[in-house]
Image (spheres, rainbow, N blue to C red):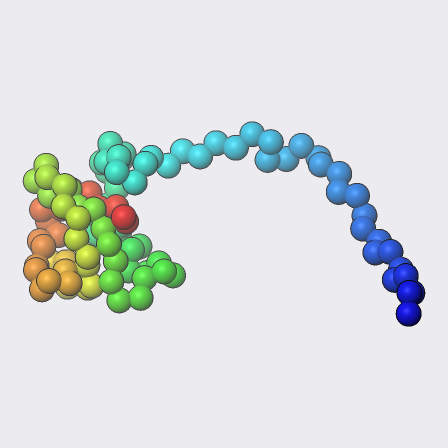
Length: 99
């Protein structure tokens, strides 16, 4: 039973030079020096609509110049709702990032 199996045909992959230089322009997750004109409500909705959001999301909030790390579970028209049943006014949030 010493039969040799046939060789596998594999075509050579030739590089055409694409993706040799890549630029990634997103700031670090802890860097809040980004665009101040981006709507905070849109960022919050994007967090809740993301595919990895199930029922809670760890976020870093910038509220009144202070940075807070919270776990948010929902929102209504005026507030974010945290895991600890805190209501954070959306109007006071100047920026939000996913942790």
